[in-house]
Amino acid sequence: MPQANRREFLGATALSAAALSLPRFAFAADDLAALRAEIERRHDEGVRRLQDWVRLPAIAAENREMAEGCARMMELAREAGFQQVSRVDTEGHPSVFATLDAGAKQTLGVYFMYDVKQADPAEWASPPFDAAILDRPGLGKVLMGRGAVNQKGPEAAFLAALVAIRATGRKLPVNLVLVAEGEEEIGSPHFAQVVRRPEVAAALRKCLGVFMPFASQDGEGQVTVNLGAKGVVELELVASGEKWGRGPKKDVHSSNRARLDSPAFRLVQALHTLVDAKGDPAIDGFAAAARAATAAEKQLLDVAAARLGEAAAKRALSAGAWAHDETWRASLERFLFAPTVNIEGLVAGHTGPGGKTVLPARAVAKLDLRLVPDMTYDGAIAALRAHLDRRGFADVEVNPSGGYDPTSTPADAAVIQASLAVYSRAGLDPLLLPRLAGSYPGYVFTGEPLKLPAGHFGLGHGGGAHAPDEFYVIESAHPKIQGWDGAVLSYVQYLHELAARG
Image 1: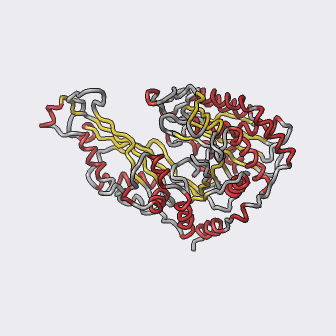
Image 2: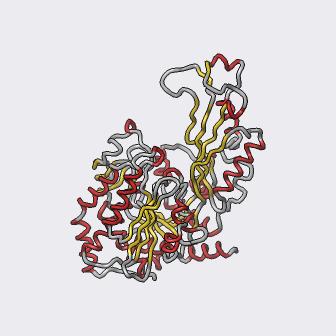
Image 3: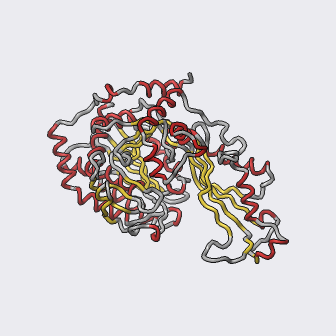
């Protein structure tokens, strides 16, 4: 067995209910009571801070209020106690680098994003940047707004934990190194420039690992701990009469379709080659490096299939069947281990009300490609370009806009084990999964040269990321789901658990 897989196997199989029932750290009753009281006392203050943050959009894709978003991130870091806070300019939007020296033995890296996805107010029940507190049946009071759960809600709860610790006169149990970017929602095209700066890399090298605040509870209170994430490539394919040398170089009347070729159909024909009849990737060499699930990972999937509700998953996705009519267990393995080719959007010619009878000179497809270990961002783009060229589509432009490699972290890493311990102490039975099916730029931490473990942590629940009516639970009506105060307290416990593992 390769060394990396052996370590993963040993880490995964070492987990047991007995081990998790004996966390390494426990608060003194007085300490816990004092911190809980301070968190409750500052409840309204913390929620208002989150509302103010959500009301400042910072949408990288639209270049909207990005300087203001960076400035607010710096302000929030200072308010939370970071002594050194600096703006880091890149070739794109700026990032923030901050450090908090608590004189502790251990240092933890923290990853934030301050940008959010676009939002169409016409699709929302409440304006996306009003940050309204609303009642949601079955869940309680939620804050609705773009960025509420992805990721400003969990991040604000983590910052509130730092404020509460300091307000009680206690020292933070670990030192912190914060890196916060403003381009996560466009594929983090310049984040590596930040992490590889000498002063940032030097600070991160002192860290036992890196974590991202997260709302880890699902709609029933279940928590999942992921040992990595898929990578992603975001790109556009463009077919145009100008590049092709056929069809019009500007939009013309559609009657000319009888005597002119169509760039829009040119794009459709190119897209058709990217997947097979079942919709699976057919790009030559694209998945050649993809690593299949190991025996240990298959065991984790067996447990997940037994514990996660298939019907609930289908309801959440508004879906009636899995691709290829696969079983629930097979769908989970495909979800976490299969690379994908997805069309996010298609744009050509007239897309408004009514017809326009135009022959478009240019057509664009927005795609994302999801990557699994051991695929790479660069390798995926090269495979796509070669595939199109080989089939006679050299004129179709491939314009990457962002993305990154997949990540993997061993189960025995402190950032993972601390998560499991805190969740178990809360009376939950955490589910361990090989990876998150979504993506985040953790590769800059887990890959060369840092090679740090990285993961997600946080009690709390939300939904609607990248969709209308995004929300984060503030006052929970569900007995197993933590609201704001519980989420804040979970970060206090997580930091102490990490400190105890030094």
